[in-house]
Length: 338
Image (tube, rainbow, N blue to C red; front, top):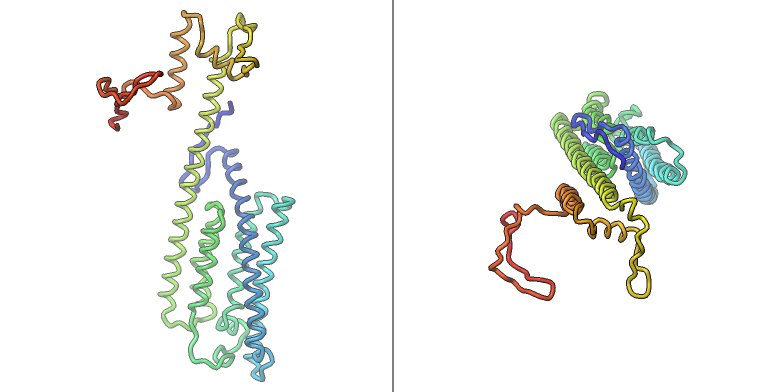
């Protein structure tokens, strides 16, 4: 059987000590990431196209308005919506091509996901009327005949992007930390560079930092539990392979008994390779070898859990629950439990 020499989990960067094990885990994560990216890209493209159609009919007058600032802002905002729809379509097409043809190496897939996150963040500037007007050098209040702007939509959109990347995409945390740093610094940097309509923007920035921090801690905790479950599964499969290998060795008949005639059941042979091995294992007619063989079988069973120790089971022979042609059923306690 194949032995995994090092399955230790580094809790600092959440990586396995065995390079091959880490490579296998990354491959399984990337396959799920690509599949989820297709669904997210399709949903994002469809929703954005419906929103663009709505704006074309509901705000058709803004695109040919006599006020230059309003006209420029409306067209730039429509351009940002179209860019977001194209981004979703590109994500869906690239994911579909990657699932079918494996065009991009596994090492670069996670990097591309992080780059896509940064692209969606910068698209927020063109989707928010205040920051879009500030970038274009226009007066936001002249572009819209309103007296108050708010960063609520901008912050909610930023939090949505961070949450989607942490909860929907099963990306490894060791490659996700740049997204968390950008999420923490993006809103304060935006407010300091372009200004903000919020007077107490620092409170919003602090709240956003708390949300991103807890999202990062939650993602790290989920991945830690997933990796620990992966180790448990790996150890169970390794132990099963070792047990089958040892049982196979124990069930191998001696050279003098290789020519043992087949066992027939009824009119047809019911013998298989597994039944032959089991027969040699449990039906050894050589009384001299029976104690030693049973002792080895018992040690394997106790270690693997399919044989319980006599100390763990307390039987009450006087408390009979029933009997039949195969024996008597009595009451007992296993580790104190009836």
